[in-house]
Amino acid sequence: MALAYLSHPDCQLHDMGHHHPERPARLGAINDRLLATGLDMALHHYNAPLVRRELLEAVHDPAYVERLFGIAPEEGLVWIDDDTAMAQHTLQAALRAAGAAVLAVDLVMEGKASKAFCGVRPPGHHAEKGSAMGFCFFNNIAVAAYHALHSHGLQRVAIVYFDVHHGNGTEDIVANDERVLFCSTFQHPFYPHTGHACTAGNVVNVPLPAGTDGAGFRQAVEQSWLPRLEAFAPQLVLVSAGFDGHQADYMAQLNLVDDDYA
Image (cartoon, rainbow, N blue to C red; front, side, top):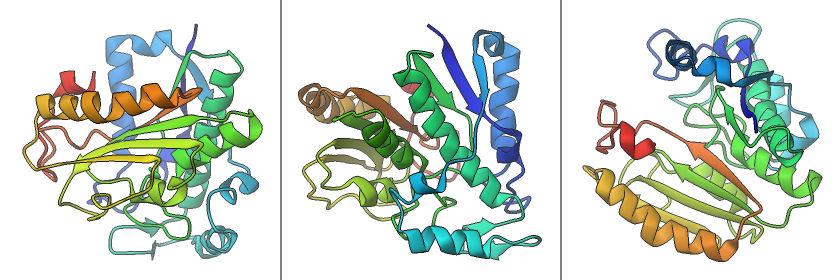
């Protein structure tokens, strides 16, 4: 069955400045690699649609969504926190990123794709119910999860999350919703300094100390994630994938290599 790849040129227009680490070149690197390996020819490409506002408001406070629409600038930058800014094309890119996640769910649930990968930005995992932070505006993976629950009638959706930073936004949205199982690994202590004390029954957080390598990462997944996932028996698995735990990333201290992600 087809492997779907979802993206949109709008996602490369979002630009918080040349020196910002969350930059358009991140998508360019993915696209270049797909072409260089020939994998691009094996994918079914889809343009990410704009997400419907009611889907955003199913996971975010409507007042927060209204605020983002209201402050989106026509020029220059509007800084939301020290790391996160909206530029001229940011809102459109964020709507495409969330829309890609929704379409990915539809393609898999309708049997049009066996798997789907969303090559989009801005990311979403730090966006909480009522706040943007950490380069994130709308929580793309949470939007996807609740779309699967509400529009496709699913009862059990799993979100598995690996990133060097804790997905505080995703946890904030799904904690204590027993229809969603959230399994995560992240470096701790590290930004955003959350996740290590969560008591929600549907959240499986595994903080990893600085220096953790592939063996430690695999042990966390095998011992903490897999038993809970098997017991939960998800009808759909959503992967929130961050690759900044790689040993080549100078902004973090995990020690993962390519094969660990594979």
